[in-house]
Image (cartoon, rainbow, N blue to C red; front, side, top):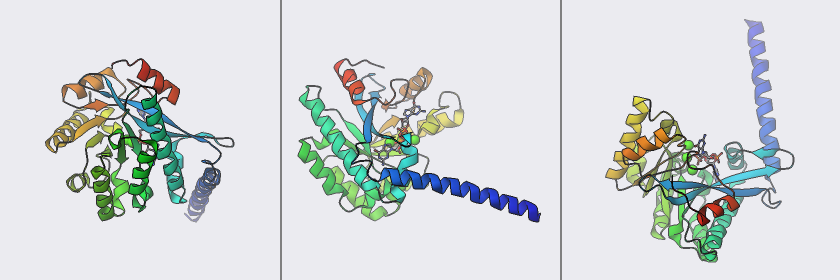
Length: 279
Ligand code: C2E
Ligand code: CA
Ligand code: CA
Ligand code: CA
């Protein structure tokens, strides 16, 4: 038993070390990544499930580093948060997205509505609302073009402050989406307190929506809950025609997912704006 204990202990610390070494490497490369121009934003189309038309995009951050290669935001965003690097990155994302919305407008491609993900510490930051306002103004972009995607996790830390910040964003005309809905702890309480326009059904419920009764029931409940609260519903991670058909026939407003398109480069999304195709 003693032997086993020691082995387990050794295994455990080895695992921890590898993980912390990896995080350390990430954070040291993350410092200065903005300045070195290593980030770019990809745009994943959102399409209406009623008309099949393109209705906007979600901005998704991409990082390519010389030493690490391509790193997924699912890996580096939590590290950036932990080491206090997310704010600088968030400032860059917001500026880049607003500049891009302006560029599309100047090219005669209309006002594209783009959703930007905001993480927990960005939300706790007192300057987020003025930052959003200034960035929109500097690029001459209407607030209605911008939507902020939050998760329960991002507002949980300081709910009172978050409620206030969200109301101020809403007051200037920015839309608010609650992302990954259903995967957190106290979704229903948040719905009551926060001025939310859009509920996003998490991919984990969409995956088997056309085949598993439980996922179907959850999706349908989210759709009717949202509509009863005057919110719209966007399904994420839609990959098959069956999923889209099921969601459309039950009143889900819009979807994003590989079925219509993966996240696209600026050039890819611009080409789509020039030659729109329906779902
Ligand atoms: P998320 O906000 O839930 O974004 C959706 C993720 O699902 C994206 O992963 C997207 O590429 C992926 N996805 C979309 N459609 C499909 C599909 O049909 N099938 C599958 N398998 N996946 C699909 P991505 O781009 O790797 O981003 C991961 C997470 O990183 C995001 O999850 C978000 O939480 C975070 N993130 C991305 N960009 C930013 C950012 O600019 N700021 C912050 N704070 N977080 C970001
Ligand atoms: Ca999102
Ligand atoms: Ca999501
Ligand atoms: Ca998700």
